[in-house]
Length: 493
Ligand code: KIV
Image (tube, rainbow, N blue to C red; front, side, top):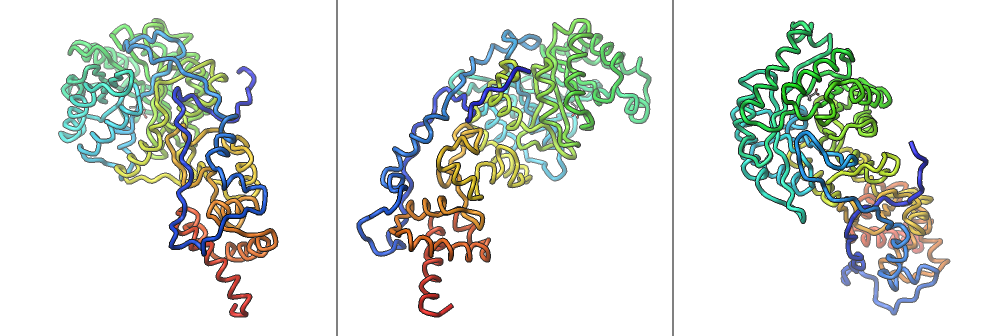
């Protein structure tokens, strides 16, 4: 890979958002007695003119690398070699997460949001699995599959999954055929372990079924057919080249390479994609895709390795939900491509990343699967800073500890620098908070206050947590500290 360039912030928003408004002043009723403000240290300017200070901090880190427009959709070809299709399977593989079932109405709501987010393909479900799922996929195909969204009037492909049998393929076609761009995704296992123990079929039988079913799907009138050799990560290479060659001849337009059990390592998965690209006859007439499960926590890394090796469709889910340990997460893969585009040979996607936060929250709500606080990109702590050293860095220059601007994923923070006051916070952050809240306090008073603050923070972790998330509680917290200082002065403590 090429050498790294040191851009502190990733940002490829074509239209950077307007500067944020100044902080909401705390309600007067809870402010200490109003006095003319007199700031006694170098942070006076921050409090006196927050708007000016913000733009000064933001300006150096908003260097944007604009992505070109999304190429026109043609099933078996992408006219720009750097464009990577994002295939979202939140509503199919994601819904297969234990406990994540969604109603048809919920799936429709999520599908509308996925279209706004700009995914190229929505895998809306597995229509043969139940009449309800067929209905859900059909409703998505009818509405979302025909409604242009965004400035470029994007309409996503609507895809339905099917095993390699006529009943499944008929159900998938019945559900997706209403979309402007319908796709059938059919799969059969190709690893020795699956063919022998699960399918109980010989490799030749598997090839014959795959070839026949891809041709059957095309014969129904579906112009776009994806084929997956399930468990490709553990399949014999020569056998993969052979079956892929046969399904391309039968009309497959996308060849998806699943690491079904999340077994491969990134360099290994990258090589698998590179080998398929180099050795499969007719591969230039199809798109290579990745589908990486997360059993070893490597799904996003494997997906990126696949893209670097030549895959031009990436299968992902919002928040990384999916079977067992989940799938490659859309937000991780997309933001890695956006942030490190130069190191990935100039790849780009059609995702409008400013919809990421909203989409993540919606999927959490409807699937009932909540992300851990430290989840990359969308976790509650992903843009929060509690340690004093980090807070000091953030207050001086945000690029010191953040590689992505929260604006780029549509995140509005409770406070501009993502500062969370806790027991590890330092003087700089605590004093800034006081100034922000309008407290007049001299250096000596601040030192007393800071000492007391640390004592309280060590004991009252929960109060600190709540107090720093919401303005009104901040004030309660400050008052609490000041009150305890007064109580001590009067010998009450
Ligand atoms: O994990 C898997 O192999 C799948 C295929 C159906 C693509 O979900």
